[in-house]
Length: 320
Image 1: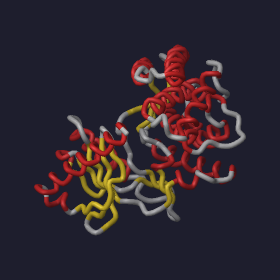
Image 2: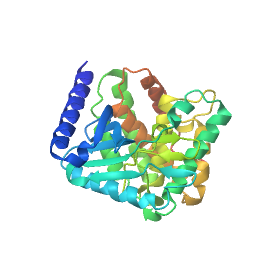
Image 3: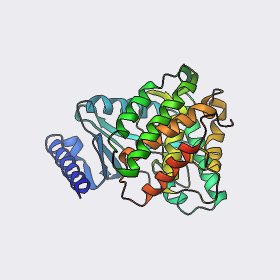
Image 4: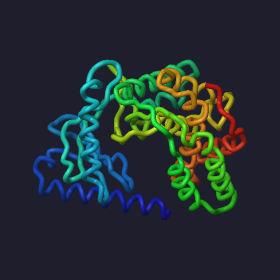
């Protein structure tokens, strides 16, 4: 109940903020709100129409809202140069007002990959995951580099996140996961890894399938991050929402899912990216999901099973 009330308060605050902005900015008032798609501490996403076309308005919150909106505008402009046409695309930027923390992109009419994966047979699932991997490969194709990996930041932040979970078996699971992240760190700290200008919230819900193309939406990132972090985020989302039946699960993630998603990106990997860094970031993303999920929701049990399997796995490298 407390969580639901907090979400309702955030929703109402976001709607009031946008209404106030539109009352003094006629250009932004051209966006006609139809629905509040999602909201959170960092941003709110509204569905509607802009200049009589289907559109998505993103309203950033907090003291860094101007810079975050400006960064998203820059990144979408950069991506538009090579992902506006063809098989793999991004939702085009329609307008932006960084001073107000607002960007507006086209709303893509299609089927979220999330819905297609829900009941997909194995062959179709593999094809969808391969397409997702190809989309990410195209996204990063013009912005990758080799860089030394630190890793302590991720252990520190996720350990702090998990420390808020203290009750019963979940508390013990959270503590064990934090410990395992620290144990995996020495195998990757200081290693050369592939960084890229990634999506940063790469997940089936942010890929839209249309007859003409596969679109990525809600691009979050304009910074350099390890490429496998996006892959780990996608895989943890998939395991939590739509776990594959009858599959081996090293690290708590179905092995065929790892293989299908990673295959199109092999050419970008350093020797340790898949074998050591991906296992590390799967733990990072499991921790992030465990710290933020509604632990009373049915899918939280999928996450607990994945974490338990991850903890059972040896800290040796995965096959490349």
